[in-house]
Image: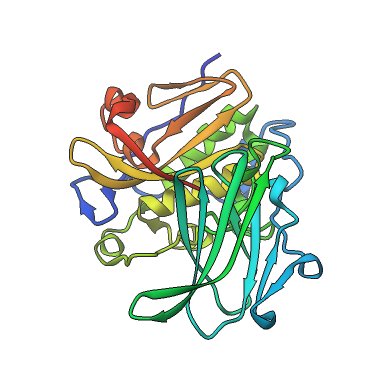
Length: 312
């Protein structure tokens, strides 16, 4: 059986730093009474919340105690780091010939970095700022990673997709799940909700700085954001509902603009939204910004137009 979003919405088509003409339907408020009235009996069963954890007592200590690296969660698809340093810190994670570089908070906050390049050897390097964009290595290690579940990096929070069990977006998807029959139906409901309640922030897109990371609850509270915000909010909601979700950044042709979108993995029979079919037991790309703004279905489905750069 196919599933359809109940109504479409026009969202301003605006990718990072690039503005296009578009519109958005008027937002509608969903009261608790309305929400309760729409709920069906039973609903999608929310799984146990999959969190990311930092074990201070088990962490390896570096730099006279200022950098703690918790290596105990590698089989769960992530590396946890907590650092208190005066200088800026960066993390480089390399697998085969692919590398990811992250900023590390230096205020002692525990952060979680996905091991998102499959099983195998990961080279992990922490660099400390020296001067004029120069960094010195303060930690280096190679890890052999074999994950218990291939979806682990995409069902937990991390440095880019940040949420907790107490996040408002998690509470929201828990309520929305009461109206869903299965994972495909929940994806469709979340799609519709984001279309109705989040509009594009033109001013933010024009001023966003390099290194910006989304805050899903802030996007939900303000009701606006850029494509990165849409993708992070959607990923937070899907993951907390047990639906594996990737946040992807890259380029979209023919204008070659930098963009953010999602891929979800569905266990049920698949779903259809804005006339785009998704397969069961497979990764499916969903582009909330493009699909909801009325971009031609064939273009959204055309894999050759999307150039994937990073997956989080």
